[in-house]
Length: 506
Ligand SMILES: Cc1cc2nc3c(=O)[nH]c(=O)nc-3n(C[C@H](O)[C@H](O)[C@H](O)COP(=O)(O)OP(=O)(O)OC[C@H]3O[C@@H](n4cnc5c(N)ncnc54)[C@H](O)[C@@H]3O)c2cc1C
Ligand code: FES
Image (cartoon, rainbow, N blue to C red; front, side, top):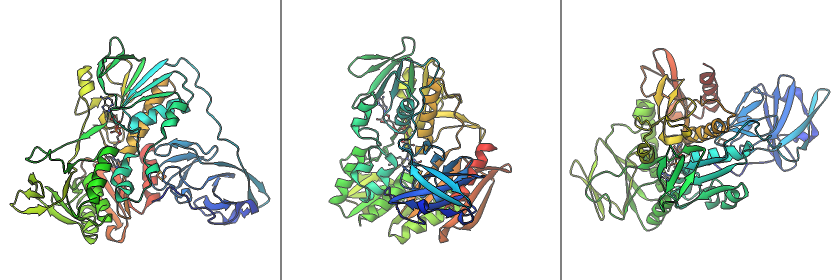
């Protein structure tokens, strides 16, 4: 996966293309000069925008048309064909927009539109002070969306992290594997916050909220007033309560600092034990195999990811990692960690130069708890992402919201959900949005195999597989009571996008 888009693929669209040469999908990839261009047909209208998604460079021509928008095949960002604007995360930046002319039976892409049209400032009364607690996916997306939508009031973002918001999913994938460049990791350079009048305060922990006075207190006692407050404090990794868990060579992975510490440890190491066979554990295993370490994964379950994906995909994921040399110790746990080894429940020991614990996270709800907000294994919000305290909203890993699609009250730990909730919360706080209604989506990457998942199925009574996971070509549908609850897929991107759209409209 790369965010360096390929250019010059397909025909030169400035020379024109016959209408009959546009495929049935309505999407054709071509170029103008060195720029990749996507030509799209919507009914009798034609649009042209940049060919590659601004998230990781996904080829939009392999995505799906939906009205006057196109969805990216890789992680379901959505772009306006009329303006190039990124309408949905995980893409934030627009793609270029081009002018198009039809002359007889041929379509010509005639020129690049100078600058993407800026949104009009929102009309109506807006809050004068917004405070966001959290410098992660949801907090960043809320701040960015507020400014993109023309909000001109005060915007303070508090983060107890040392680094500005980062592309967290990269920390267990390409960056950890040593493939992604350092500059891909921050979501924005620090200047961007200054240029957009976002007062980003790093290393700043919010320690208290006074909902009556509408103030947030930070660790040094300073009180920051708000009219609207977004809590986006995310989650923190769990450390097993076992002897040796706090030794210096035992790592968790949440922040860029954590990731750098693992990379530094890997540079000196030959063998690693990863505790946990869920997403973080397995992605970490894959990344560290790319660095040629001997990787042992210890986990209590019978099959990796079976609870999320079912037995068949679980077996496939296991075989994929085993082919790459990962050694699994399943139905087992680590009971103690010593300087150079991990001791397992069955008495076996595994030599390890360092350990990574990927045993799950817990939502960071202490601040919400102290403020007296309603909790239920997370912060309870309504469909407007409002907590029970006036003016206080929550989004991302901490928020438990009423999911219309599953009919359940859910809290998920997905990057795209956190970003989209952040964007929705911004609009609701500004008075231009009314509710959050997204279909959950996540992706996970294991070596060169991406797994995409739309919907939410905490359990199911029917699981249907179309295709073959081992051939890296399948769709798995999870149903409950006859209703489609979720769809997982490997290299069936259009099916995944179609399922997302169908669930949105159900
Ligand atoms: C290594 C890794 C890889 C992942 N890969 C994927 C993936 O491939 N696909 C996917 O869908 N999801 C993935 N996830 C999950 C995804 O990153 C999270 O769901 C997402 O980051 C949640 O966003 P958030 O804004 O709720 O929380 P976070 O991104 O965790 O941000 C929370 C922020 O709040 C700050 N904070 C917390 N408490 C306070 C306080 N009291 N005061 C000030 N600041 C505070 C933290 O410092 C942090 O900046 C991954 C997670 C990790 C760790
Ligand atoms: S590459 Fe397009 S959404 Fe990720």
